[in-house]
Length: 117
Image (tube, rainbow, N blue to C red; front, side, top):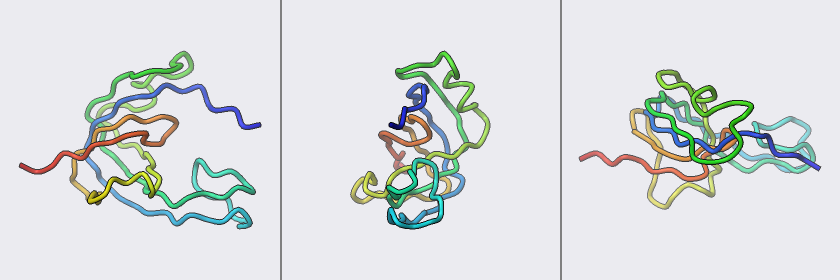
């Protein structure tokens, strides 16, 4: 049984500095996949976004071991992931875009891209 980590859900806002795409792998692949993959189960395709964090706040969950501000430090760069099938229709990630979203355990649960005026 896999026990989920005791981390809070945090809201982050920042500028995308780098976008990488990681192909999924099947359960029978021998190589270890990216964070979130489970040996023998596989991993779906996902985006790996490096974000320059500008604002961080607490949303919900357990923050006794690590607060949102400790995990995602404003003014620093951090990496979050988004499963490919969670990409909204018509969205494409690009360097320089402003993104805001809720993150749990390194994965975006929801997000919004700021549209240029």
